Image 1: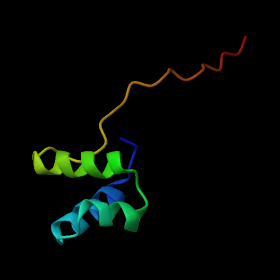
Image 2: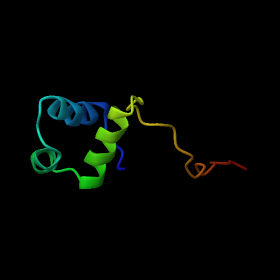
Image 3: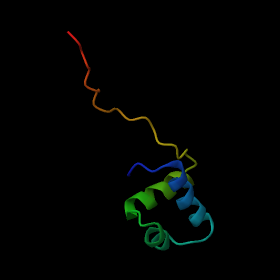
Image 4: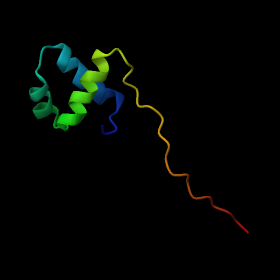
Length: 65
């Protein structure tokens, strides 16, 4: 799932709760099918929609000699 902002998560869930179909949400917001389906699935399971911390590559250290 792509990294969505909290506002984008809320848009998807708001439309879903308003009775809009998944396909209409995809067309309206121009998000991928996977992103919309996984966001709604996560919401329906009662899990939080906040983006979880990710393990990224460590930042390059700026060492001065």
